[in-house]
Length: 188
Length: 202
Image (cartoon, rainbow over all chains, first blue to last red; front, side, top):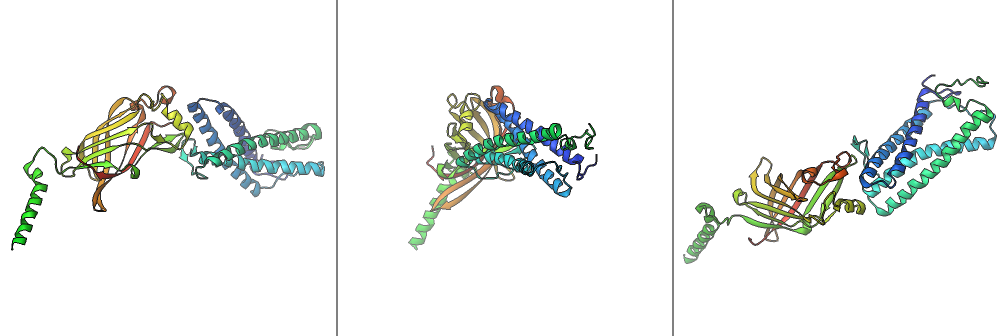
C-alpha cells in the first residue's frame, strides 16, 4: 500500500488519519460520559483529557483535509444512484464539518466559561472568545447538539460502508482497510 | 532682620523635630510612615494551574497595614489579613468548591494572615519575611516587593507591588483527593498591587 491515495484506493496516510480519528472520537464519547456526574476533581481530570483529545482531533482534521487536497480521491463506484451519490457526498461533507465544528464549539465553551484549555498539560491554548456566561451556555447546547448530529452522521456513514460491502459487494469499505485487498471481486 | 531670624529658627526647629529620632536613636520610630491599603485601588490575585492551564482568582477584602521607612527597616512591619470568603475565580461552581472543607474551609478558617517584621533591602527592592497563617497552618513566607511613594493631591501615597509563591499543600489547602497535584497544581502564585495611604500611627 502506498502512502498516497490513488483513484482506486486510500493510501496509508489517509487510512491512518481516518482510523486514528475514529479511535479518538470513541475515546471522546467515553470520557464525556464518565465526566457526566463525576465528582469535581475527577470531572476536571476527565475533561482535561477530553479537551486535549478534542484539540488533537482538530489538528488531525486539518492535516486530513490538507492531505485530501494534495492527493487523488478514490472515486465512488458507478453502481450508485444519483440520490445515493448525493447522500454519500452530504455525509462526507458533514463529517468534515463536524470534525472542525465539534472541537471548536468545545474550545469556545471552555473559553467562554473562563477555563483556558491546555493540550495534555504541555501548553496552554489561547482563549477563542472572551468569558461570557450566555455564550458558555449557548456553546454547551451547541456542543451537545453537534454530538448528537455527529452520532447520526456516523451512523449513516457506517451504514453506507456496510451497504457497499454486504449489499453492493464492492470495495468501498475494503479500500479504507489497511490489510484488505482492494481488487474488486477478489473475495468472491 | 527679625523675619530672617524667625525663618531660620522655624527651619531649625522643623528639621530638628523631623530628624532627631534618628540622630538620637530613640525608641519611637517617628521616621516610619504608617500606611493602610486603599481597598478600592489595591488588588490581591492568585494564579493556579488547573488542568494544565493558568487560572486566576482574586480577593476583595484584605486589610493591609504597613509601617515603613526605607531608612529604618528594623522598625518596619507588614500585616495583611485576608477575608477568605471574599474571593472569586469568576466561576460560581468552582468558588463553591474552593470554599468547601477540603480546600479553603472558610467557615472554619475565615481569615488568613501574613505578618512580617523582618524587612530587608534587596537588589530590586525589598523582601518581607514573615509568617503566613492559612487554613490554620502557619509557615514561613518570603515576599519580595517594590515600594515607591508619590504625592497625590498634596498627600503622600505608597505603591507596593510584589509576588510570591505559596505551596497550597504546605497549608493543607487540598484534603483527600485534592492532595493530588496533577489537575490542580501545588504552586499558587500570589501577586499584589497595593495603593497605600497614610494613616495615624497605631
